[in-house]
Image 1 (cartoon, one colour):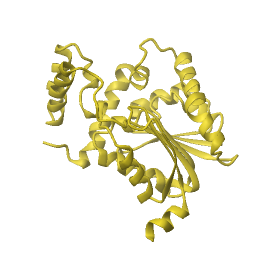
Image 2 (image 1 turned 90 degrees about the horizontal axis):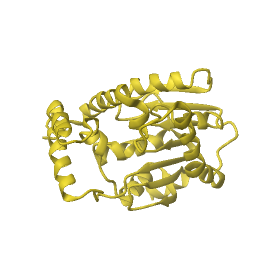
Image 3 (image 1 turned 90 degrees about the vertical axis):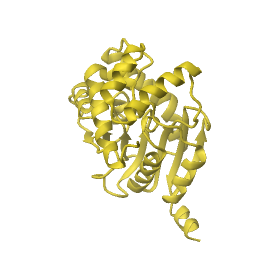
Length: 265
């Protein structure tokens, strides 16, 4: 039994709201459990410097650029963007995450906190954003088709010449042994059949974090070829691929009239 696409958004919202209520910082950045507000924000600045700064130096946006952070979560990197862009649209499916982020960024006046529906960027006008960034987000989506749809939405809302930089899981390989794969396969199968409580109970019984049950955490791998095709089909042009074929694959693309012409010919 597969979850109907119309239910994806609501299921993801429920799962991420529950994670935010339990520990928003940890489920956004799960490599550490003892985050303070300062260390959480500093990790966001560190990632800005290591992941974003060089890309924007090679492909600089306008000085008065507006950007969208897709999957801002509790705002780990949002302040870093707000310090460098005229306006930041911080976009997330979880109202609980957004509430946590608003509290963390009280007094920062150029952030627009926006709750999405989990399936598209509706509410964001076409050709309205200069730069879009997404990290540790697409890797959690339950299907490749939904990830492809989001790539199309990213290109839709970019202005002509606008840049996007997004991370995705570029491999279908599981970074666990056969016992771990079998256990999570059972847990995720229960989740996929709509048996969320049973899925979390089994995960906890087996010593796993029940909040990580289901495809809204594990998501799916996406081949770089699929990403490149989705970019081209939506008037985009690949500028850089980094880490292709790894769990930390990155795509940097530009919204290009040239791509539109070549696609039609």
